Structure formats: C-alpha cells, structure tokens
Image 1 (cartoon, rainbow, N blue to C red):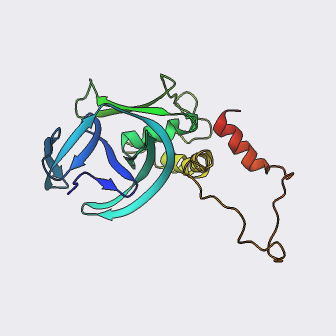
Image 2 (cartoon, rainbow, N blue to C red):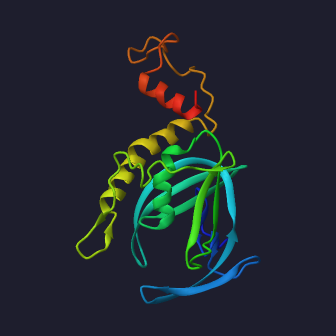
Length: 230
C-alpha cells in the first residue's frame, strides 16, 4: 500500500523542516522520523526531503477545509514535471504563502520554474523558500519601497503588526489576476479528444458553423499575449 500523501492529482509536497517534503505515515527507505506537537497534540510522521523541484505551474487554487487540528486555508499549486504531477501546499499566513502572493504576478507561467527550500541560517527553526525562473530569483511585485495599490501592514496600539488588509488584497489579486492567467496559459495542456463533427446535423437550428474569420476577443488575446510574452 502506498502511504505517501498522494491525491488523485499527484504527490503532495509541503514546505517544512528546511526542505520540500513528501510525507509518509509509516517508515520507508529514504524517509526520516519527525515528531512534534500541534495545539498540544503529539504527532509523528516520516518525511523525505528535497532541496528543489523543477516544473510548470499549471494551476493555482484557493482551498478551505476542516481537519483534525481545525480549519485549514491556503493555496495549492499544481506542478507538472516530466509527466509527474505534484501538489505544493502553501498554508494561509505562513511565510511561503506570503512570499508567493508577492511574486506570483512576476512569474511567466508559460515557462518552467524552480522551487527551492533550505534551512534559514539565522533561525534554524525557519524554512526559507523561493522561486527561480531562468536561473534568477523571481523578484517581488510588491515591496516596502513600492507597494503600488497593495495596502501596507498596520501597527496596532498594542505594538503588533497587522497584515490582514494586505493579505486580503493580495488574495484578491491571486484569484482575479493570477488564477485566470494560469488557466489561460495551460488550457490546452491535456490532450483533447478528436472531434469530427459527424454527429452534428448542420440543419439543426441550434447548430452554428464556426466562423473561421472571426477575430479573437480582446480579453482572450490579451491573456494569450501575457502568457506567451508576445
């Protein structure tokens, strides 16, 4: 029996323990035991670490679900590499999630990327995470010096910083800008069944022959241009 976190869509990867990790409920070759606590509840699992992963981001999805330790939210990235499919989990409010929301609009989704993760040198408890494309780290779209329309963090009376407005705004950008762009870029990734049209009656009043001279709608043309860099 396969005990790796595999879904119908591919292998499930998380950004933890100084690496990109596959997880298993039972001991396996190449996996190491990890133990800890979540909300006071102890757990143990086995992980296999990877320093990086190459591939195309073919889908970006927001999820909300209930689990053993409460409600889970975040982004799920579908990645395709040499015929294998992976799902990379980016939990809401965690550093990898915040990082992705700030670089997502600077990624060319028609080209492959490289995900890298390592143990932070300043704080070994932190897993550093980044995305590279064309051999270079993807630059942030929103920075402290140039936030554009993105709200800045707010310092509360308690002295703590609130990123609520910023995260809400960035999530809206992911859902309205990035998700449609990724979908448009990879709309024809999977082989489509051949269609001859033999089962269509041209005399049917509901049938409309394709207009081969029709122009591409402006919004689709713009997305295609963005996806291909044309």
